[in-house]
Length: 518
Image (cartoon, rainbow, N blue to C red; front, side):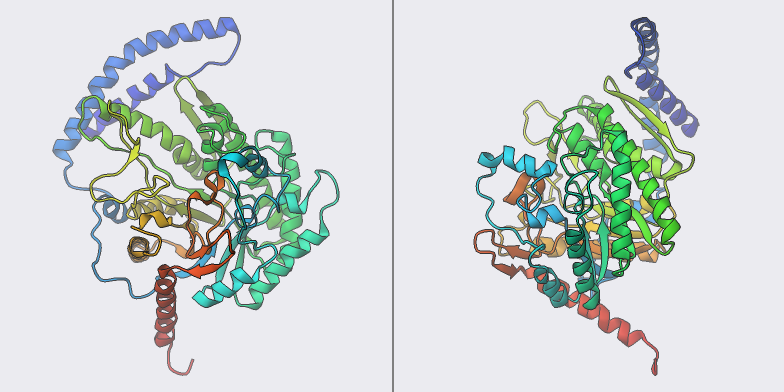
């Protein structure tokens, strides 16, 4: 009975949502449709309230015990070990993005260089950057110091194809080839990202006609770097973050606000580009591993039983999670995309089959908590005892457990292509205690995932050295190493020694586990 009422409640909510969706067509069609919508809304609003309330009450009475998968149950009721993890549970690498470490001066004709130019007064003098372009040894020396054998970095199309339709830059392509050669010579496996937020000014994800050019660029890069040992490729970094921050929040270029329809169009174009690239590259290089990096952002509601705020927060969290995670996740599982937001978007598209993936790049920072009140204050907040960073990230490592559970449904290996915490989690910059505790809990989650036979392979921390944090510039710092933008001095933070020990212990454990004589 409880299941039946829950199903009826979901159906009523779906019908109620349909009555609030925008309508396309002629004026006559819109008038007729909206008249039907008004009738449908009037009919299903009371039914939705009654069935939802009944379903909530019955579930609370009859299903007090958890029926969740072990990792989901752990995410809801974490039990952390007081004993620190002895060694890194999987291989460790680091990740960064070309624009962030090299700065706008190295990438003049991009959407983000335009952003920094337009906000020069607000951001003030940015000083120096880690400059991996001119000083790749800054990266490689520190990876060697840590004992890391994997590095993920991005290729910038503005360097490879400075002018659309003109010959590609052999000089800049050779630069990336040389860097890959340096990595492999040091026993470090490269993973490349073809698009990490930064785009040349002639390109836009809004235009379907721009997909072909991006696919051609991807082929040239992949073919060239394949010769230097690259076997792992992320096509696009965090499609949902691009859609949300660029077209809903307006924080990223091109700074649209509440344009859910535009966000959905961008996601469609990105997914079609990913599929084209995958099919093309696998034909010529079957041994390439090609995946997508997805940042799982799932909004949680703060009030659990408040008669006013709880339903409002639940509705807002549902749609915020849809644009940041839910719509894309369903698409990756089924090949069918739909984004429905009352009054803002009613967007669907379908592909003949679900998008091809050799692995999924799971990126996780937090599950934001949404709190509404009459008194104002931060809308993204925390519960008692949780630390919140300057980025409004709450320290919530248990969320990684349910994120891994969700991604395991895709049936492909999981690489944790970004896991990070900015230094404001700590009481002061000289202390990394809070970040170390956070990362230790991340290791505990990974251990539990491995015990559940989840296909988690590698962890790439974000990030090796402080770099420009997009629209926040130097306001936020995620580096394991501190980079001084005035002096260019690079110094390790305490978390470096912690990670060196965990990697060294991992190597020692593997040596000890080898049979004698091997």
